[in-house]
Length: 261
Image 1 (tube, one colour):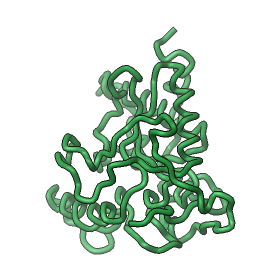
Image 2 (image 1 turned 90 degrees about the horizontal axis):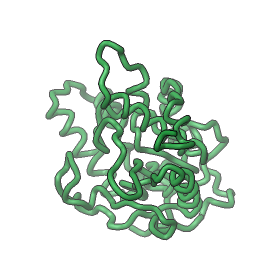
Image 3 (image 1 turned 90 degrees about the vertical axis):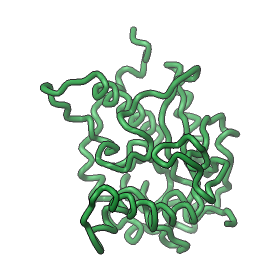
Image 4 (image 1 turned 45 degrees about the vertical axis):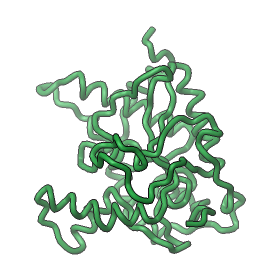
């Protein structure tokens, strides 16, 4: 039996074509309502560690390519809605069958961090790469990866709700599983389905391993009803507007997280 034991089947199960998810994501913050009467609307936030979840806030680290330094204003804690943390703990219990666990890079995100990456870093990075897009086309490319910051209770950025989380998988006693790119590689290499159509003529063990590991992460999270961002293998949501848009839920449970900034 493989070292992945009962999880082997998930490594072999293809990630569906992400075109429908990309279409569902268009304008989701304007289309999807937030149910303020839902029992979870005002749910408390908890630290990831209290649910046995491993991780460190990537933006607060010094060794965090491609940034290579802490981002001013980054939170030093990983905060999540209580139900989201509980579901991640269930994912961990399943992953533990193969000696694996989740590793969190980011969870609730301060508005200042969201604004920095959306307004400053990503436009500058696209310019550095020689991108010629302008106006609405440039904004669309920025927002493929970095949601617009908002103080609006009706349209919060996913990470402002406590329902969105960025994560990968690691061995409990060691290294991270290879996913085919850095976390925050905001290029097509990060697209969830990037490795789903590997060409036989350009075979590599690296790509094949990335394919299997992305599948494993995707399906472990799907088992707990998390919805994955189509263009970021690491981003998952539960209860927020993106989750509702991708799953067909009638409304989101969560608005802005109950945290004073």
